[in-house]
Amino acid sequence: MTPSATNVPVVLWRPGCPFCRVLFSGLERQGIEHERLNIWEDTEARAMLNSRIGSETVPSVLVGDAILVNPSVKELVERLGA
Image (cartoon, rainbow, N blue to C red):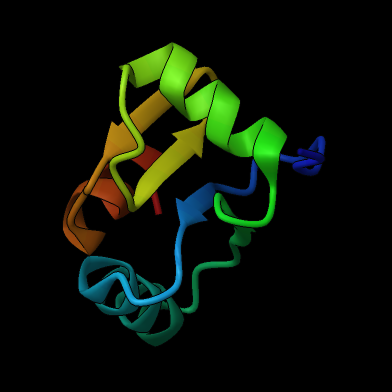
């Protein structure tokens, strides 16, 4: 798991997740830069998610030290102050 050192939100996701697709679509519509980590390919990201929230619920978004579990685009925009 190698998210960037910037304040860019990092979306933990997995293929086939309909909630992830909705979030990605909303982020793109809002023009919000973000990183994506596929928890099925990135074992470190999956382990971190399990240790932090006790499950593999996606989408989960890292914003600074916080993890937002299945946030709406509005909730994420508010958290980012965008």
